[in-house]
Length: 56
Image (cartoon, rainbow, N blue to C red; front, side, top):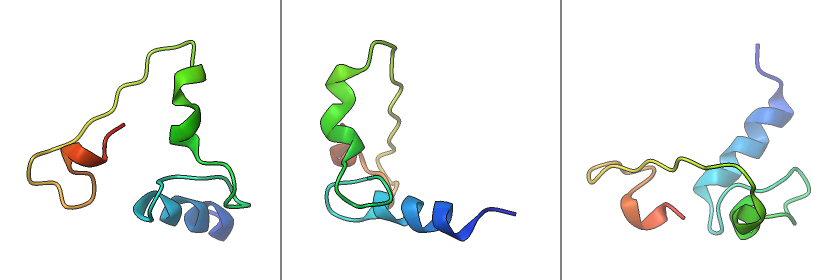
């Protein structure tokens, strides 16, 4: 089973600003430029959850 706290955090991915930590104050996409490893971001033309414009 998936803990409720994890599910609640994942719901932030669909809100303005994107995925954030449990406190709601740390937006992960604002810190992607600090990553030292490659990040693969995927989107689809007809994807209603993650359209191309939503991919950072």
